Amino acid sequence: MFTKQALRLAALAAAATALAGGAMAQERLADQVDLDQRPFWVQVPPSKEVLESPDMPRTADGLPDIFSEWVDHYQPLHPRGQPDRILRPEDGDLILPEDFASEEQYQAFLDRDTGTNPQITCIPPGVARVVGQPYKLEIVRSGPGAFLDKIVFLHEVEHIIRKAYFGKPIEPDVDLRPYWGTSTAEWVDASGDGKIDMLVVETEGFRGSWLEQIGFTYADGSTLREEYWLNEDGSILHLREILTDPKTYSHPIEHHIWWERANTAEKARFDEYHCAIDTAQPQRIMERYGLATTAAELEAKQPD
Amino acid sequence: MNQKRNLAAAICAAMLIAPMAGMAHHATSTFYTEEIIHVDGKIVEVVWANPHGVLVIQDGGGEYWVGEMASVLSLAQEGLGSADLPVGMEIRVDALSSRDGTHRIHIEAIQAGEKVLYGEPTDL
Image (cartoon, rainbow over all chains, first blue to last red; front, side):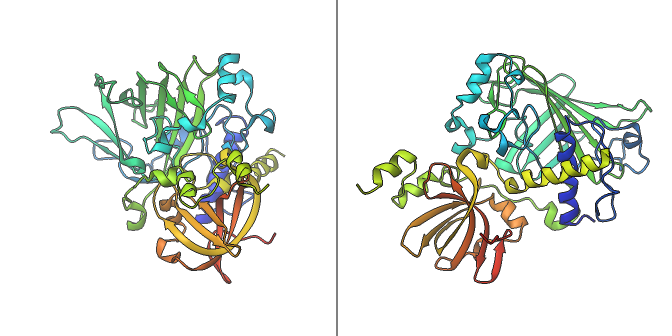
């Protein structure tokens, strides 16, 4: 059983990993902090010890049992892995020109218009970004009677349904599916012990969209690789995302996120997501109360 | 030594990440400073929806403030529901001030009298 404090500390451990220079092997933090008597550490990519754990829950057909509701512990996604609130050019060298494919791309980021963020008009985030949202995820798979063998990701945010197909992928209608591309799923034996231990989803055919809240975007033609694996006892689901977008960035963008397996009725509950434009754009509410919504309006309202 | 560095990084991450817990569709830095202000007043409207809950507060001078909160699902995970915020209730909020000087704020903590409803109020 996790306490809230333990989960927060675990999140910090994961964040510390990212801050230390990408999701690399790190020291155990359990020696320094109380993690609810449960050591939590993250190695990305995972070690053989994790992947070959005898305690990993498996389905009847021998797959890692990722089929559950998962409680989010998201963190933002961007080139250097820092928390987004400090990612402004005036904050120093946390976001650098060399992260971008060209000076023009860097300038485009600096000149970004946050008003083009699709979520402020209640449009769902795209596939890479959808995990960077503080909402639950459920993973299910098709049964033997299904025409197509697939994994289905049910995201609480915006009630998003996403499918990754085994074998030949299904080409989406690009006019109707602007962000989601074509996803192919594969079960992989990453440790080489002869047992499946990882789900890999490869996605291509994106049309560009926002990558993250701060205004990072990805371009048409980007590709995304997702690697899902369980911790030793299956209580944590890890995801490593690798976005390759050579039109926009000079290097692949890696992102690690994890979820806690929902183990109570409350955690497993599916909460409805109602997107209200007024709360996505609080300035609409400000206008109703006669408040200035910009510095210029504020100045105009000042008495002479 | 490395362990100490990692612990320091974790603490640093705590300071950086904690304020954005529950943010859904944009970063606080886009619209808000890191300055915490207090707004005392009564609740005049509660919008309980995603991507953010919103509280409208009227302060003692009659001025309105529009306070963005975390997503309502995140608020619920923290134990706060819309019924805890009835219109007319007198509250104090800790909030990040807006970058442009407007009355748009980002609510970090809410108290009603001595009772803490949400977050961790600070003394300024």
